Length: 160
Image (cartoon, rainbow, N blue to C red; front, side):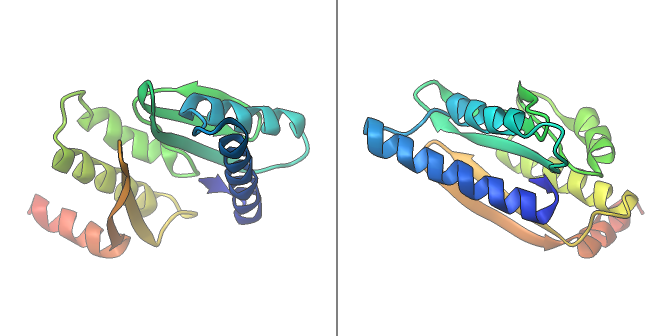
């Protein structure tokens, strides 16, 4: 998620509660598509009220893996990869140059780390750590938590 910390935290909790209610009522998990549509509809209700939130909704459901981008205007897009936040244009530069459909898992991890690292290096409002998670069919795993400055030194030393 990106945007105002308060908005992101609030809407993440609201969506989580709505997804839990769906599961209790219907005895099955909500689809990734439906969860993203739910968030999009909630954002549409508050369009123009100064919210600051961009989010990626991902998961596995009966149709397989799903990834959606939803923002504070209610925009909802499905796709294979997204970047959000003030550094997203820098991240897209790295992602677009390195993405291909047949990336191995390790190559995908490296590409994601590079994209975030270079975005935080170029964008004054980004920084800190790369917290990477991998969404799998049976749940998610935490891949890493890397300090961006250490990653940047690592990538710069690779060039030399």
